[in-house]
Amino acid sequence: MAQVLEFKLPDLGEGLTEAEIVRWLVAVGDVVAVDQPVVEVETAKAMVEVPCPYGGVVTARFGEEGTELPVGAPLLTVAVGAVESVGSASAGPDASRGSAASGGPGSAGESSGNVLVGYGTGAPAARRRRIRPTGPLPSVPSAASAPAPAQVPVSAPAAAVAAAPARHRASVRAVEEVVLGGPVPVISPLVRRLAHEHGLDLRQLSGSGPDGLILRADVEHAVRATETPVAPEPVAAPVSAGARGERIPLRGVRGAVADKLSRSRREIPDATCWVDADATELMAARASMNAAGGPKVSVLALLARICTAALARHPELNSRVDMDAREIVRLSEVHLGFAAQTDRGLVVPVVRNAQSLSAESLSAEFGRLTEAARQGTLAPADLTGGTFTLNNYGVFGVDGSTPIINHPEAAMLGVGRIVPKPWVYQGELAVRHVVQLSLTFDHRVCDGGTAGGFLRYVADCVEQPAVLLRSL
Image (cartoon, rainbow, N blue to C red; front, side, top):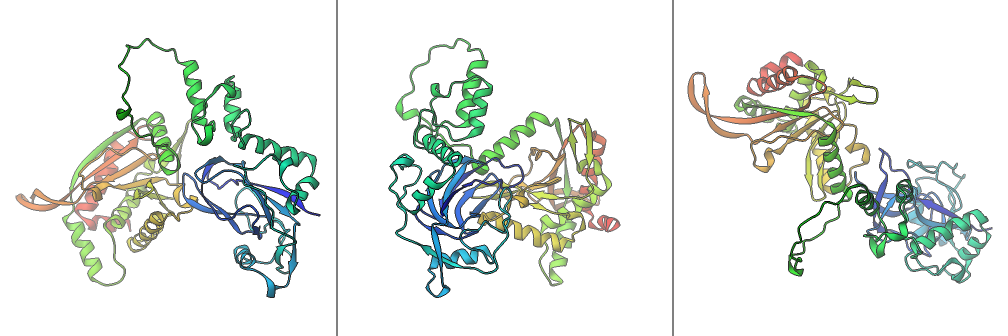
């Protein structure tokens, strides 16, 4: 007996609430195996392939490429039991791919034994069986263009829909009514709840999404319009067609950065102090290390090692504020974030337990995470949980900056470019390699004396690397 199962967008971890469909890896009518990747999505953290925990025939897809879906929204439906097993000698390439993706035994009608946060833990079967459709592949269109379920030609998957429990059929019909352009073009339950809480009639709103889809931003804009009194404005001349600007949606990585920076400025009373330091001896020490052979040590790794030593002396800056409990939480491990610019925008990968790593190990981790960031293969866990951030904006050719703290951390050290400058060295004017260091800190966790002590220790280690030996 065939059964239609609905696969919803799972919780991808670390508090993510939505994801954008980048590329569908299967089409309606395709046969999928357990744990076969079916869609590639982009979250605010990374690009990931989402595996399906069911095996069978794809009967519907919800959302076109470029559509943003909330966690828990339907991704696709699979007719389980609409295919039968055959010997491995006659199995097709789709079955081979599904077998490789599953990483272990399991039939097409089973749920996944692998776990992606939010779904799946069925026990695997004793052996893998290859699958093929029992009849012609189903001709069910995608959710964006399909007729109502009652109009779909009867096939194995369609029969499975008819055989499914009434509650499931009602759920599928409700989703299809919305996606197919029903009276209220909303697919996000979060949007519906937000409108309900503020007493808004969704039928009165115009959606800015694809095909008039109502997004969260549309509801929030309507809420602000009803709550904010409109002040009289002078009549302005109409904007000509040629003066219209380009609208770029704030979503994905860019949207996440905007939200986080806005929250940091809104919640954290930050202050910044800075100092110029003579980095000539640090550069000489790095040259000696690299000349001795072995993996190269980067300047960023040396600065990171200095930061971890400074945080051991000033643990106030490796903390976060819990305003609900009205407590400062000092953290024992240093999970060091570092800013990395990519084609997808600014990301902050995190090096776990940086306080226990040598300069050589830190260099290797920086290199690995930077390459993964540029390839877009960082996992969400690689981008969260930082306790202190090191921002080397000197690579952009600037000397100084006032960094915005990476919420909910308590501090960030900014590093400008290291350039030859006139400097008084041992009582005489000389040309030295000088760098500007700036520390932005949460004034709730410490006062200026602590922040100044941290920054002065970092500058002393930069000017005289031998000072760092005391902390090793």
